[in-house]
Length: 367
Image (cartoon, rainbow, N blue to C red; front, top):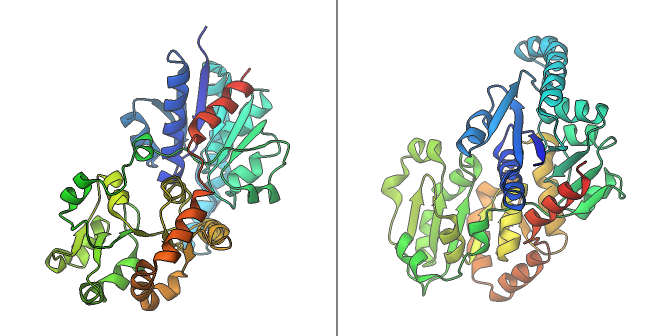
């Protein structure tokens, strides 16, 4: 008889992409396994999960709004009712599907599902991507059977007996990235004899990074440094950046071939999302991390600080980036010893077999 699993959570790509990776890992281990996702209605998982080939049920749950304004006050008055209805719906879905285990990947959608599963004595496993756990996972941790984490530092928040240091699952194609691949240089029309820095602000872009670079492109031209700059769709149009590209400077709204981008990059500038850091660690990429200040619990700063404290990355505050980032990029790129140290130290955070380790925990824990 095949196993059944529910995977719950979402809200952002940082939760959804690991969830889909875990589902794929389960199917690789047991091809006949049945997998059902539970997400939040109206959130991005309701599109991304079906596109990946899995069924999903949406709950009416919504997060509690901490900023005080009239709109949020209204939203918060409906919060208890949405939560109660979500708990009831989650119970009905779990009772009907009869999973062998329920996996939570973070995000408020996972709260009702994991809470009800624990009450129904079904094994629950949490996967926490960040060094500072999200509120939902902190709440669910007491009743969880196992907690897969990416950072040892999370033992401040979780029981050590339940924790398993697995790392975060990353895209399998990235693990096969060939460094200094001639095809990658052809793809971006770059010169393999020149140094190259890549700037990635996520699929939506990062305003601070874009403002900083947009005002300093001549510095990269003068230093004869190549720049591949992913702006995000919104900022590419807003800043009218197409006209600023040159032989050394490649500006694009989105990079489809991240393996090629990492292949040509001698240095990477990135936000400090957990999945980005996991990718950079597995590839040993020297990195400048500019944590986003607009995330819950300021968890990106905490992620970046773990690496910066061990000279595994350079951390630059978002508020300092506009004035300091371009010069820091060029200076670091021209410091061969610094690049080598950063590469060696970030590799110590790599968990290349993370997906397999997480799937092992799931199958060992399921009933």
